Amino acid sequence: MTEKLHLSPEDDFPEDLSKVPDKDLQVLDSQVQRQLDYEYVAEGEPNPETEFRHYDLDEEFEERDKRDD
Image 1: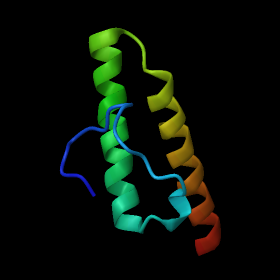
Image 2 (image 1 turned 180 degrees about the vertical axis):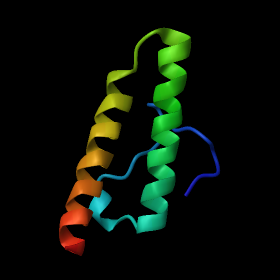
Image 3 (image 1 turned 30 degrees about the vertical axis):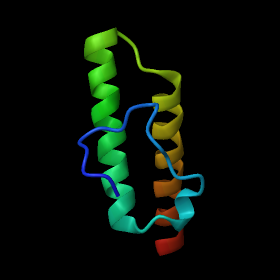
Image 4 (image 1 turned 135 degrees about the vertical axis):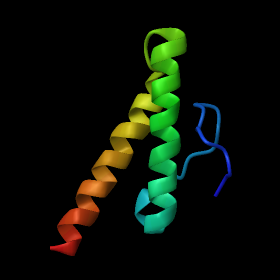
C-alpha cells in the first residue's frame, strides 16, 4: 500500500476491493477522502473517478458490515 496521504484519479486502485485486507481498505478510504476534500477546495468539485472510488469503498464497507453480523 502506498505511503501517500491522498490517492489521485491517476493512481492505481484495486479492481476487487473484497480482496483488500481491512487495514489497507481503511487506508485507501482515508486517501480517497483526502483527495475528495482537496478536489472540492482546489477545483470546486470532485473528479468523477474519485467519486466512483469513494462510492465503491462505501459499498465494500457496507458489505463487510453485513458479513460481520
